[in-house]
Image (cartoon, rainbow, N blue to C red):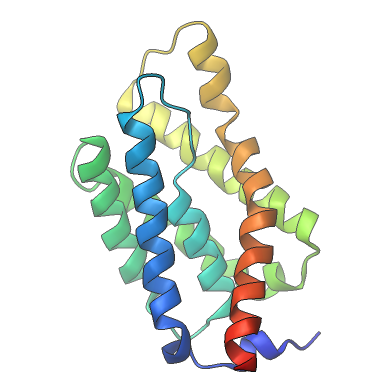
Length: 167
């Protein structure tokens, strides 16, 4: 399966790459300011999974490490905790990215759900969070939300990139 999207250079979409991470960080920051914040997945990590699967020659481990440090500051957690988790998950994605790219979109969503379940479990064990009542339900549905968000993120980025390549 060949895609024109895979043939364009990463330098042509650098602005979209940076903007997508900025928007993801902003959405997670806005969510934290709400009186009743939603349990959103780390959107920048999901977007990093997209960029990893479609641009092979980019420094993804370095970018997710920096994103992880930004998430550490955003969530006021131990410095390096999110960075370590992001790098671990990105390493796992790098191992299967060529196979992942050939999966159907619903299979990709299942893989993303599995990776975010690893993220939530590891985050839960590292933080030792105490969840009560509905918080427990919301906390453990984050991987499912990430799997559901994968489809619109994937489709919208493919559409934006295809528009960019036609101009």
